Length: 630
Ligand SMILES: Nc1ncnc2c1ncn2[C@@H]1O[C@H](COP(=O)(O)OP(=O)(O)OP(=O)(O)O)[C@@H](O)[C@H]1O
Ligand SMILES: [Mg+2]
Image 1 (cartoon, protein in one colour):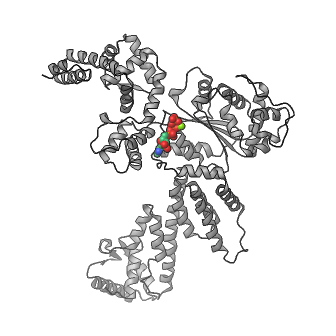
Image 2 (cartoon, protein in one colour):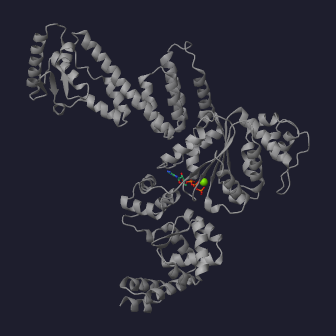
Image 3 (cartoon, protein in one colour):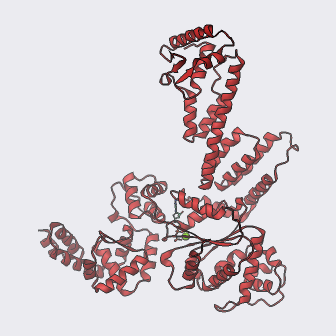
């Protein structure tokens, strides 16, 4: 279709905005510079007629003082552009913007039309800028760095000489794990704004950021961490709200410096460590110092282990040197790495047994205060439930006497492994009562997120298998990953023939070790009889009294193994039942199956009989099984 310049100008004016009619005077003013209203009215009607003729359809229609526009008749790139911006496809929108919308329109006869074209260009650019900016803000709050990077890159296309945007792109690159690319972005920017070199002085924030990036590139520890990070961690799914809350509590500006605690808790494998890692990955770039510690069950007896670990990093050395005696010697006695090049005044002799002198606690307080005064600091302790008594005593001391410097204690703990009455449990309860404490409870992933996670680690599985896996894992991310990778599930696989992955077996073994005889009898009984048992039925199978059974269920509930719902008593996750079942000695299993079968045989109904037959078979009593079956 060949269209005249005037027709193309009319199309441009009509389709630039998402409207269905345009006032005649506006069109006339843009297209012709003449005062003769009557003549212009006639010319516009003629133009509308010709345009419809050329297109062979009714694109325009005269309607009194307006020209109506039939938007369905024409595919319009401006509409595509708007929908690309709206749906967040910023690269596509940018490409369209760069190609230009009105390149085919060479009508330039009035200055009003030329100005209008320029205005459209600005409007379209600012539409994209606004959308990319708000996407950046959202992605930054949710720590979705690859999304944040894409938004920032489009912003940089739009303002290629803007240093604040350069910094955003660099930060997003680093936080998305692309440190080398962050440096490359800086180089490209420098070449663009200063091709001959020597004319451009970057802002201080840009230089500091570049230095941080280069430090990361040449820091062997960060390198090895980055290498570890490259190991295939599945992408984070769900957790948007929790991550936003954690990031906000960690980084929101505080009117008064001081101490505060943030606790992330939930059952084992639910994703506490992962969430914290995601949140603190941006801390350094936000100007925070992060000290990472972790407490391990087997090292509970090592005095102060989790606190001394991060203090042995070389950067602590200058801070320890500024301590007065006798505190410096106290710290040196505890952390031999701090002795480098400086002789302690007193003979360093580490504290013995579980005793901690007030003196040692004071030394910790002074050192941590020095550190936090120089830079806002996050002390992150993973697996807090395994902290030794001495470390807790030190933290309690710091907490009570903290005066200067911004310090955040960020801990993760697993409630069911927190032993009531211990000093760790008391510390956590005390902290949770304070207003300044944030407590984030992680629950299982919802179905959609769990299936998405399963698909990301085992993409070859059918949707049905992934859904079975997600359900059997009860939405616990560790179990989802392990089940999906252990059970290369053929389509249609049910949860009953699923292999129990080692992580679940370990966890269940650990929990079983904490049980007394009564609780163990009940949990084994439940594994045999199956989910949905009533208290009375379970009591008979476990061979316990009602009171014993209730006590046992209390313990099992506290350890997050078993829940008691209106439909009956059940394992928290189906896969726990398999794990417990597999740990019962076969002879004991037979006894339990036989007891269950007898109970069901006495109950009425066909389904009970079928079940009884199944239990007799599993008990090895095939004669009884066939009696039930007939
Ligand atoms: N939201 C998530 N998206 C994707 N993967 C996740 C998510 N949450 C956790 N994971 C993965 O699940 C596994 C277990 O998570 P993580 O180690 O954080 O659990 P945890 O709660 O700290 O467990 P524990 O109590 O044993 O310390 C890890 O491989 C982690 O990367
Ligand atoms: Mg963890």
